[in-house]
Image (cartoon, rainbow, N blue to C red; front, side):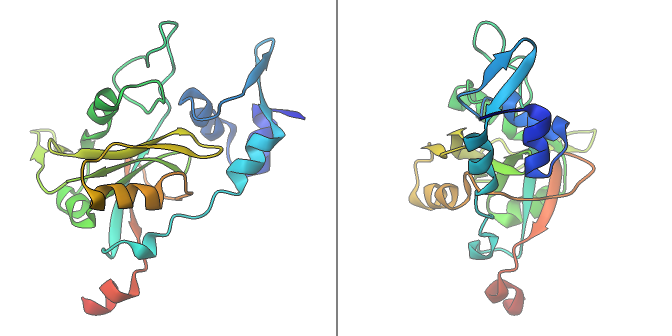
Length: 204
């Protein structure tokens, strides 16, 4: 059974514009077209709805920043258009360049979280680590030049992940979060979410 993007979005309880971010990012293999309509297999929607919530309580921080990204439209050459957005066709180095800045954020709070989950439409599709050093521009935007792309998702329905971090701690964080659901609310690209890690909270 095939669903339209509107039907798929309705089944997942999200706006159609939000669902289209997943399509544009290339995170949903197996899509087909009927004229100008993109059609999504019912199994794909069911797989998305069954993804678990991110186990933030297992992170060693009381709060983490979340980078909320749009999908980058693929060009005919097979690369992502522009310099912003998440796309599964991007090489790891190019993806990292898109994700590590420049954002309006509280850089110290981002660094204190230890990890920076990256979401598209509320699903964790990449994880950055090594955020201890940042640079801030005259316009108040910050970047993390030493950030490491710990891993990223190439297929959200299974999910299929690629671990790219050289250290075990970063790879473990990526495995914990990638492919999970992580809701966040913000007027900008960076949101801040409590982890509800009681050990950390009680120790403060």
